[in-house]
Image (cartoon, rainbow, N blue to C red; front, side):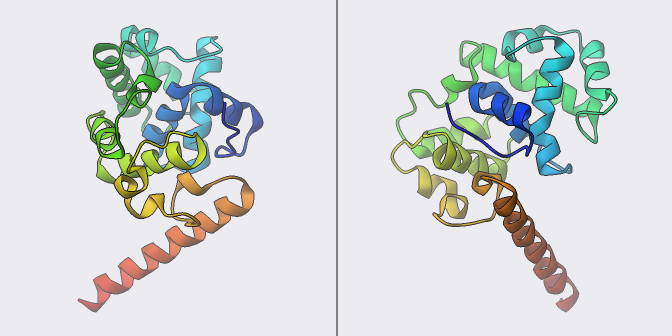
Length: 195
């Protein structure tokens, strides 16, 4: 079981380390929302549902209106609780239909990084960049290292980088990742104004 420090909260990080679905949902929710809050949300979800581990089949079969209410809180599990509750349910349905209701089955017997990247990209809410970041997170912090995983993850798989959640191991690295993201945004703004 990996020791993760992404949410910067002991209980939330403990769940991320032992529950593959929690980790996957944290990545799903890491969109237009502070990174550590996105990765802390699965702990809040589990607490509100009164469970120790999140179960894809239970979330897939949950009453959609009730799940939205759970996501709304307070505090809300995401900036867009309604759409993210729906996306969570869609993702869990894919896990039930294709992976026997197990999040870790996505990567348990994967032959190579390219296959894992393809599988991640087929999940609701996982575009190319999010899939590469999650693949890097699995490789760098969870010991999921199929052949070619770094290449499939692209620059997110680079050793020693500080560009994404895959590189967060504590408060210092979180600050470095934030700095990198701000520099990227600033550079993008400068390119936009130069054209």
